[in-house]
Amino acid sequence: VSIGVGMMLFSVAPSLTPLMLSTFLMGLGAGIVEALVNPVVQDQHPEGSGRYLNFVNAFWSVGVLLSTLITGDLLHREISWRPIAMGFAALSILSGLALWCMRNEDRRGRLKSAAVFRAKYAILKHPAFGGFVLMMFLAGLVEGGLTFWSASFVQLQFETGPRAGGFAIAAFSGGMILGRLSWGTLVPQQHLIQSLFWSASVGIVPCILIPFASGAMMCYGLLFLAGCAMAPFWPTLQSVAAETMEVDSTALFILLSCAGIPGFAAAAWLIGFFTDSYGIVAGIWLIPLGMALLATLLRVQKAS
Image (cartoon, rainbow, N blue to C red; front, side, top):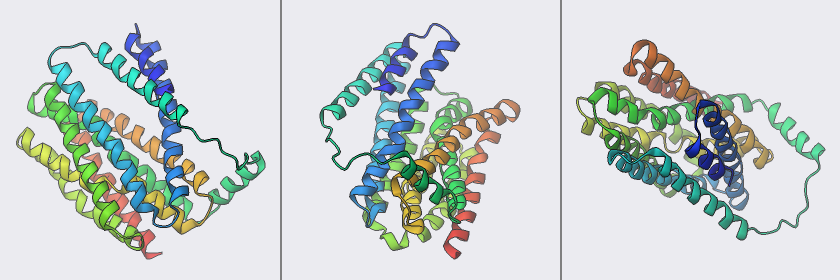
């Protein structure tokens, strides 16, 4: 509901300041959803959670794909962004109300604040936590970079319109969907960390080639392959962390999301900074750099 209300205010904002405040409200709601959905899945499937986390997170990419295709097409038809945002706000509020109606009262009782703080302190002092924080930050950075900037890259490089930019995000999201569903189906829990390393290593190749794409169609193909490679990072890293650290999974997933979400946001700012200074190609080069750093950290984690 918070996301929907924020988007509704966003659609009627008369200036930059209320626009930023409404964006903050949307981010607040999205952060809560991100922090709580995966722990619920982990609690339901503590054994072999990598499969179920990838399945659930695939539907995040389904939403991105559908919304970008619809939005890109409507903008291409010169429909104002304000009614489009209002329509998505209504859908978000309806989704929140539907979840409220389906709620199941928790009869286990609430944990005391002291128990919550003890659980988080145990995670913070765990020797493996720092490595997973860095990996989650990089996972958020590479995924966020192409989610936010693939449309702008296609539009600036190939002088296309909003519809073509929407196709770029859709191609990337399509790869994310296929990758997460494939991982959930094919990769056993005991091979997750090794498979993550190879996915990050191989995924460097399409990310490096994106700036050299000779046309929009070639760029779409490379974005699709990059999406396939990046797909398992976020949900699978959380599953591996829960299995490795053996701590309270809900608190762990919340803390790891606190690393992944800033990485997601940092990509938008960093690529924008380099784009303003050196051009969009220079900004996109941050993506393969992040992939290489993530592959290195996964190799270290695999060896430890």
